[in-house]
Length: 82
Image (cartoon, rainbow, N blue to C red; front, side, top):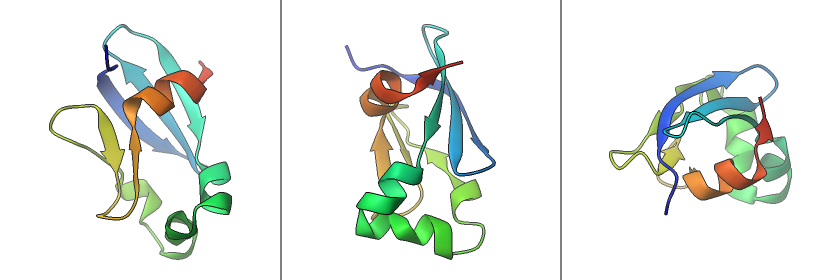
């Protein structure tokens, strides 16, 4: 089963606070992705882009633009429990 996101909030230092439908909450650090995936670098260089994170209609993916997204299963598995 793909975890569905109930709430997402961008926080300081390129982290996301996420609450899933099962009430699990995590902090996901996007800096590793920014440092390893070339298209993610824009999250650091384009002012305001990171804070403009959005949730897709199915609630199984967060995205910033057509090139930068994160599926909920990655966030669920690799986020630090909060």
